[in-house]
Image 1 (cartoon, rainbow, N blue to C red):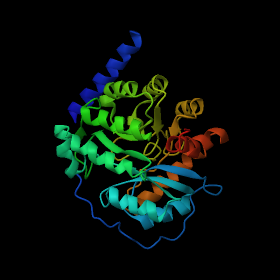
Image 2 (cartoon, helix red, strand yellow):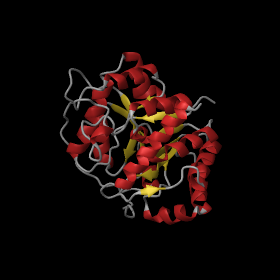
Image 3 (cartoon, helix red, strand yellow):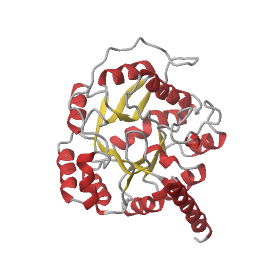
Image 4 (cartoon, rainbow, N blue to C red):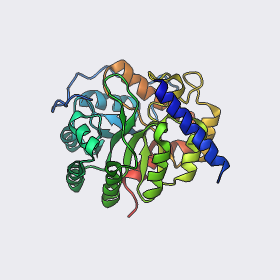
Length: 317
């Protein structure tokens, strides 16, 4: 871990200087079905606020549908997790076309794809091209090119400017779809260069790279094609690091973060990072989104909750 923090310090120092100078296991092919939990309303003074969930690893379709009903999620961007793959995601979207927005993924945390990432095997991009050509998938992701290690997930650290990532953005440009990427701030310089190389490709930054506030503002100011996704950042506590949340007391958003979101209402979207490990953990994630949305002004809330994501997946032609 010491190496990670050293790398992070180097990145922060580099950006400060620049400012002064101008493996998951193979998936089961069937989603697990469970009985729906009793309806429980979020802890709030009113009904749930309608929103579109931008980040769902669909492992349990029944649980996901129940959570969406209970917590006001009218639609959800879905991609594979530990118990699903691109095919099962497509099947779920066919069953619920008005609820699920499928994204196609060739992310390297899956063992079947990692070796191709290691060698920049172009056949992996060919596989993604075939998926996107069906017209079913409305985006690409989650692509965990740079992901710190966490339980059940081996670390990934692939060059955001390498042939595979550049090929992914070229396909996104070809099919005019957004790309949702997980890239830690240790590779933010390369991410910035990638965004500049593909200015017409909308890129959704999963969890916003867990950046501090000033780096979030800097990246958004420099890259109009970047959308900052807030999944997991609204949790009261984060299992990997206490400073990943944007809450100052487990509930209230830091005023400075609220100010940034209100100043750039078209650049943020919300998500749960649902993975369906337990009812308790998923309920927390959905409640956290509701908690954030209730702290935004009405106009900003509409953009962050729904409008911005709709613009990403249904761009004006």
